[in-house]
Length: 96
Image 1: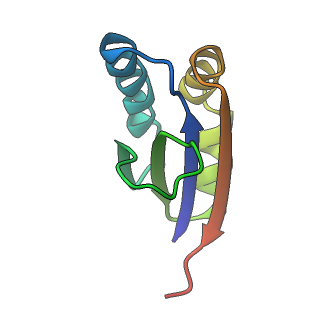
Image 2 (image 1 turned 30 degrees about the vertical axis):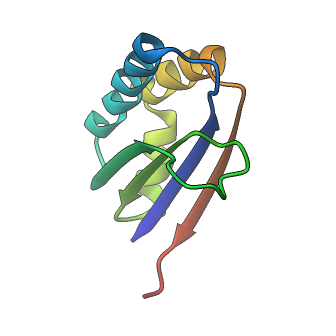
């Protein structure tokens, strides 16, 4: 299983803007190959300023590659870059 984890800094969003961001990010769960999708706002004190985190799982690396090339993903990335300040992405293959 492949995990694709992305954290975003979005400290200046009001409630409506955050709702819009979450709705846009949620579109990603409809890209073919997505096995699981989760999204939420950080509630802890150790996030180093990252406010929002998303986790998507795939069966294979090829599924992740296809997801990244998909038009929905490209559209969401373009939108996200306009409303968030920074992101970090971590992809790994689960060994447990």
